[in-house]
Length: 254
Ligand SMILES: NC(=O)C1=CN([C@@H]2O[C@H](COP(=O)(O)OP(=O)(O)OC[C@H]3O[C@@H](n4cnc5c(N)ncnc54)[C@H](O)[C@@H]3O)[C@@H](O)[C@H]2O)C=CC1
Ligand SMILES: C[C@H](O)[C@@H]1OC(=O)[C@H](O)[C@@H]1O
Image (cartoon, rainbow, N blue to C red; front, side, top):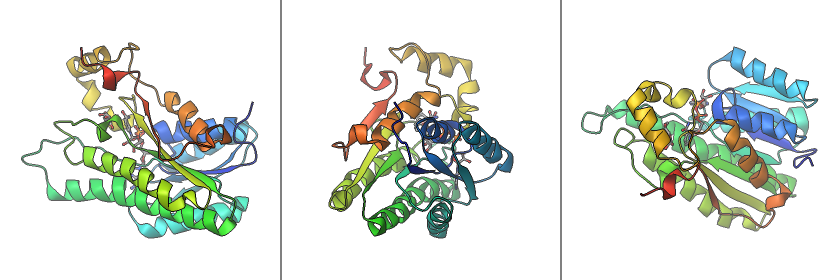
């Protein structure tokens, strides 16, 4: 069964990792997809090619999510191409690992701007269009298990993920009357570009793997199903929810 037949889905940071898996997962479920990306034209083009091979339409819109104008441009381009916005996946994020005591101010500010301001304006832009259309919609934000637990080298990052989680709770209230649902996914440790260097440390990687009851770190594709589900009518009565997708890592005390 295709869960997003005829939908237009917008995904930020969709040229790699979890965003790319979400974009392709949406296309596998019958959606046309608009892809925001920051840097690599080649990765974005290959994501479009994968989606088109599935028989769906796709466009790319390059832009920095930290700039509020990017959200407006992204929505405008998607509407121009596909006529509407049904689903928004706010995924783009950075995690430049660094110790707390000598954390550079510019790293903190950039992390807040991309992860938090970026999510805020992207969600707002999509919601404005959904309200204008008048037939509801679904917003899924990629938060993290890090919204719930800390990280020694992530002091500037974990609070942005808690913020994204909180944003979905507040927008669920603000947008419920418009039939717009807002939920988050909380991935555990997923093997992507964002943590490639961090997990190159074999000892750390093995420690992280041991913490997961399901016995392995996650792959980007592990997020596609939960995101598509929350985006779809299968989750029609789900809003303000946070779904951990972490192989059980969070509950594993001993
Ligand atoms: N990999 C993991 O273990 C986890 C990742 N996450 C979150 O998942 C999301 C996706 O990350 P991953 O797929 O893991 O890594 P990734 O590095 O493959 O994906 C992040 C994407 O965001 C894009 N991006 C970064 N800054 C941007 C900007 N200013 N404007 C537009 N796009 C921008 C990147 O180009 C990249 O495509 C992030 O929000 C991250 O915080 C959450 C929990 C765990
Ligand atoms: C980038 C990290 O490996 C990853 O990011 C998160 O949000 C998770 O908590 C992991 O620490």
